[in-house]
Picture 1 (cartoon, rainbow, N blue to C red):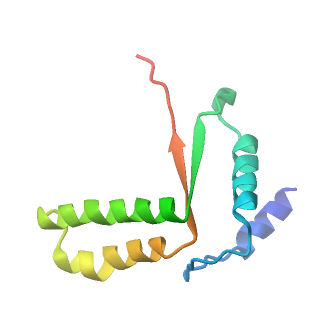
Picture 2 (cartoon, rainbow, N blue to C red):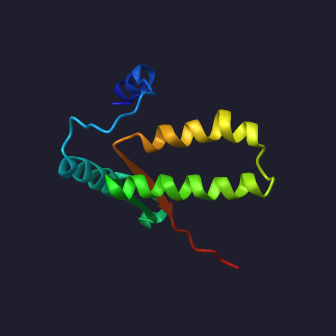
Length: 112
């Protein structure tokens, strides 16, 4: 089992060219995400991790909000204009150009 996992890790590849088409139907994406979250271990079985699947208009809106937030930081002088134009904005537009987004939400409790 561990050998198979190591082989998968060694052979995995990142796809940098994202696109608006998916060979997998939306229902299958949601099914896979649900199966993954149900089978991910958590400390003391707290099941504290949540995932959000954003597709189509919801996905685009998320990245529009992110771009707007960063534009505010650029205007406030917290991010240099050159960094914004040459690094951050192209990366965000690349993410927006994808089919969808899966975001992780972590919940934790604090003890004092």
